[in-house]
Structure formats: C-alpha cells, structure tokens
Image 1 (cartoon, rainbow, N blue to C red):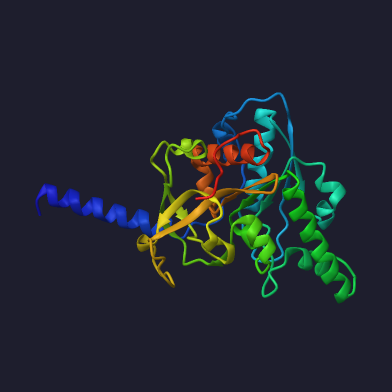
Image 2 (image 1 turned 180 degrees about the horizontal axis):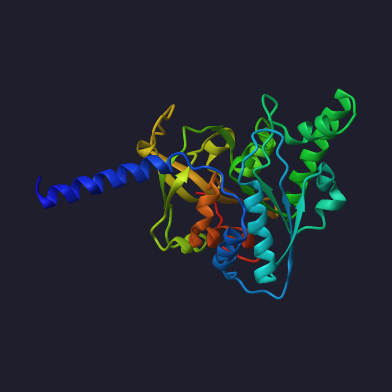
Length: 305
C-alpha cells in the first residue's frame, strides 16, 4: 500500500470514528473545569445599557428531563455574574406564573420546561403533580396560568424559549400563535449544519456567516409554524437530515426565530439538546443577543418573513 493510500485510509477511519462517536453524546458533568471554561467564553453584551434586567429562568420539566437543564442554569447565572447586565432568578414552582410575580421580570426564559403527553400542558402537570386540587380546579387554574403568560408578553414582557420548551403548551392554538409554532417531532440526534437565514441580521452576527455545525436533535414543528409569522434566524436543509417523516417543499426547516406578540418579544432557539454545544462561543453570543432582544435592549428587524 502506498504512503498516500495509507494516509487516506487513516483519515477516513478517523472521520468515521469521530462521526460515530459524535452521534451518541452523553451527559457532561458540571465540574469546576467545565464552569471555568464556560465562564471564559461568556461574551460581552452587544448592547451596553445602564440597566440590570431581571430574568426568570424557569427550569422545571414534568415530561422528558433534558439533561442540559442544569447546564443552562449555570450559563444564565454566568450571564448575570460576568456582565452585570442581568439579575437572574431560577424558578421551579408554578407560583412564578402568578401575574404579580411575572411583573417582576423583564423577560422569562423557559429552560427545556417541557410537559408530558398527551395533554402537553405544563401548567396542568405542575398543578396535578404538586397540589391536591380537584381535576376541575386544576383545569381552570392551568388556563389562568397560560393566560397570565400570554398577557405578560402581550403587554411588553419578553419570552425566551430554549429547545424542548417549545412544547410547554403544545396543544394550545393561542400559545402556538404567540411562540411561532408547536413541536411536531424530531429524528435521532445527528450532526447538523445550521445556517443563517440572513447573515447580515444583527442577531446572527455571532456566527460570522459560517453557521454552526454540531450534534443535536433536528426539531420539526407544526400548528402556527406554517403561518411563518416570525422572523427566521437559523435553519437547516431537510435533505441533509436522516429519518425525516416528510419533506417541506422548499427543503428548509427553521430552528430559531424572533417575533413580536403585542408589545412583547419572543425568541426561540432549538439549538441545543446537548451541553457540548455550549462550548461554541458563537452560540453563547447568539443566546445572549437573543436574551437582550427579549428584554427590549437589542432592537432589530423582527418583521415577519
């Protein structure tokens, strides 16, 4: 075998090993070293203000327990600690969604707080699991909490939705209209090349026109998603994805967007299911920029496509 062929073979084996290993990312432990590296990569806010914005990071799931929830908590705590631009509060109880409590915050982050099926109603689940109320009362109060969030955003609050939290009120048309869509399904985890819809848009400037290649669950959406009543930011090409159920006509599936809802602002980012993606400084900048958009500090074009 020639030297060049040996080199080619070794390269091929390396690529195969790297790719196969990457498809089965396992949970990362939150260690001092991991936190130190994360803190090192925390970006500077794109918009400098004299205000410290109060942020609620709601992190209770009743359905699939995404292992990245605690990693995201540490990320947002570091956003506050390192920049002083945010006062971050971590919440787990449904009382956070009382009107008087929501008023305390400039933005709410739903951190993979997805519910169980088939109801796909986080507020119902929280009341069912952590109260002794009757079924009728639970149903009524769950509707009240949902309406509280809808009103909070409509009146000027910010809402940031991370990955699986798009499922929070998955069967609610009103909630889907506000968030821009509902969860449909996802194929297996795989390597995905995320691309910018418009590389000149300020909220994707962090990617510098190169997008993001990482291992993730390729989310597909339904309900209000097909109204395209949002400003898309990131997408992937469907024909590059394995095990899809159906193909969109234009081969594009959006995985991050922003939109107005009344006087408020919504930011959704499907990336990422895995904490390994937080090792990308570009993604951290994207998330911080998105947070600043929801608080109203980062003013960008959020007109629908």
